[in-house]
Length: 122
Image 1: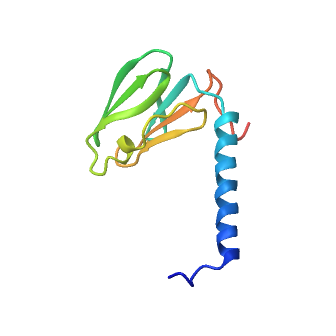
Image 2: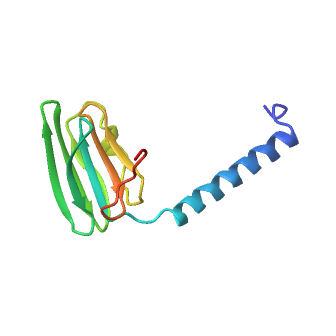
């Protein structure tokens, strides 16, 4: 196992690791904190949530239900009855452009800054 890596391989891994950390830090500093979250079900906007107010929201569809929790300017899916619970495990989101997705329930939560929404085509 000791002969598998050469010195140049380790240097390359180190450079890539440092570059990744720098990119992550820059994105954390550049992306503003969102103050609203748009909730989409079946690609339709069903609610815009004010993330400055701590609250709990329930979204029920014929596919199942999701409990969305807002606390301290962050949002997450606290509970869901989907089989994989990936949306619950996505954790807390607070930065503009971050999303939480529950594919079985076709629920998407997208963080926004204020009322403006990203428009791809006008």
